[in-house]
Image (tube, rainbow, N blue to C red; front, side):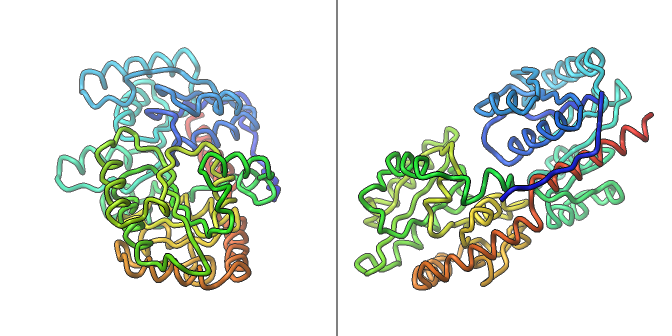
Length: 394
């Protein structure tokens, strides 16, 4: 599906986005999408970061990486040094707006923006839960922007609850999906075949593929998913396979725990930990059912949105931003967070539904994402925020 994106011109403007690294998360992906829009609008897109696997995509988008290896450091002395470095960049590059996307570097970015009298924007990409007053103070940096962008209505409500002083500065701009990249017609058979080989699916094409994408961390619900599929029939006319695709990011103990759980449940031949996947459209294309069983609130629900854009039904937790993406029993199924039995029942429901009913649900999901949650909509709204701030400071 093609999306026509008409952007307001920002000719000659320079925007500096600040983010610790350019890996594969939602904040990082949005950074690339905004760099793409800035280039198309005639502006310069700078990104202060220590870099990562998305560096080439940033360059292809027309953005420029300004490497700062310690930009994510929480040490106060390092933060002060980062402030001075960012202030020099702002002055030398003629930066018009500073946009921070993560807490630790946001403190340095705020101070640098104030030193240079530049507008400061933040995007609240997570819930940033606080269990102490000190942690709430640390989190409050993300609510101190001249404009505070919330990536869902859920996030906007969370900001107001945690930081009431931000009222009047919050703008809700939902995360968007690149519906040209995440489209069923965009994935050719060669990409499906390549990923099938990588995941050892070639001999099991008749299996129903259940995909849980996301970094390997406990709150993403991998434990619950393993325990849920252990309840499914193993000898049936609908054989299945669970794929856990995601980067461990150094959490070796958690990976070992998941491997032990898979073995304990007798699922070694049914559940696979496949690591990071660089071709998520192909991954969704191979899936019949997508799981997003987070046990803590997702600020938006990127997995549900990307899978929906690919025409796949999603089983997600009934909390956080996912509730805005998934329409229960229309585009997917919602289950109580952490409820293993409910997840198992939902998976069995979609297995029993058969391919035609799953396809109808997936088609409804695709329509919803293309109507409400596109990268183009995010780009237009964000550039409008920049344009307004530049106008105020002129």
